[in-house]
Length: 85
Image (spheres, rainbow, N blue to C red):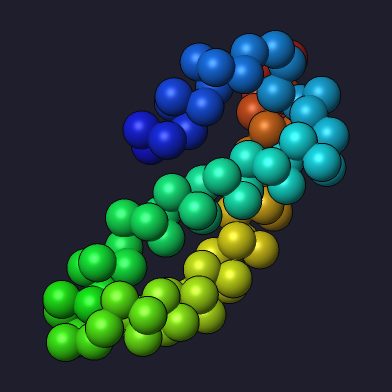
């Protein structure tokens, strides 16, 4: 929530007009932030080194990245339909 709120404050404009490159940038920035925050938690909770936790987190992050890209694009398109109506 906080990341998307902050991101939308920085990058203003019509959300439905954002292209694939911009959406890819948003997705990568979101997942990079999430990765930075979760690797230490993975390492502590699973008693792993930071490197081992990073590798474990990468697999989850790649799956979430695809979901985030699709979800945000679909949300913006559906939001446009409801706001226009």
